[in-house]
Image (cartoon, rainbow, N blue to C red; front, side):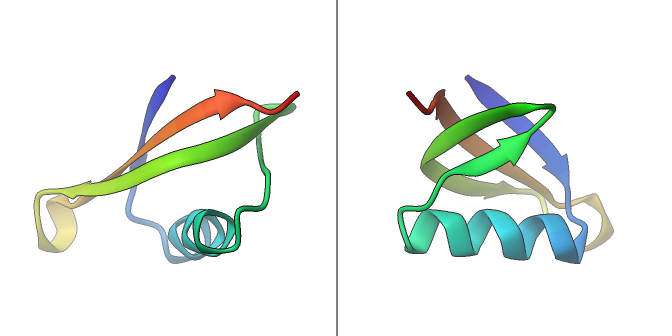
Length: 56
């Protein structure tokens, strides 16, 4: 599952911390494992792309 997030500091920080520490991330009532993070664009148009899988 690939999710795009508008660059909001709290979301970006939470995703980065969960990814770096291999911790699950909760989004929309589901718990996911973040497989990879990438950034598209720059400045105000930047988007963070999180590649996630359901955490079982």
